[in-house]
Length: 189
Image 1 (cartoon, rainbow, N blue to C red):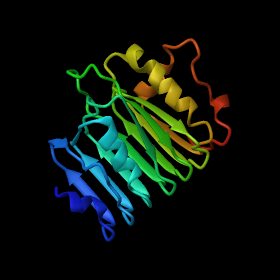
Image 2 (cartoon, rainbow, N blue to C red; image 1 turned 120 degrees about the vertical axis):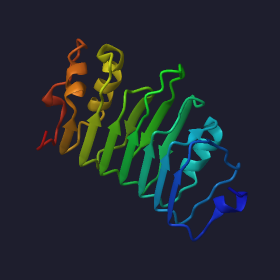
Image 3 (cartoon, rainbow, N blue to C red; image 1 turned 135 degrees about the vertical axis):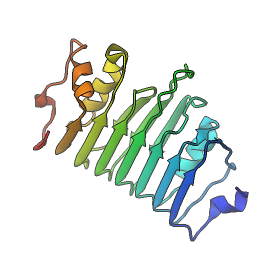
């Protein structure tokens, strides 16, 4: 994509679905982008990926589906108006890299994660969260137990929580298994 594309003032919805390395310019400003959907892209490096997420000034909905995080070490997803975040990871057995993804969700109402926890996801400032879903079908539950448990604990203010049966099972592999007392506001499980 041409560099001028990444400073669009009129673009409101961007849906990128392509199996290729996402090479991004050093400056990205989407001043009116409200919905960003990324499917099957390969993130090239920390800096440009961070630039993409921080350059969406009014982003409200972010979907990341089947993307390859293998080239990344750490990235932050932070958009003041972000209300919906859906992450669906592909199971990449060839990648030994684990990316640390920090999510700051001051306006986040909906969060969904689906995958085998190939990366480390951390939620911060997510007290506005209403609905969360964690779906995992990990073949080795003990390997993902820590990440599932940590993410569940970060959802303590959620009102509705949906967990796959495997997500519940993997928590039982830890001595500090989550309990419903962690959830202050839950009214539907």
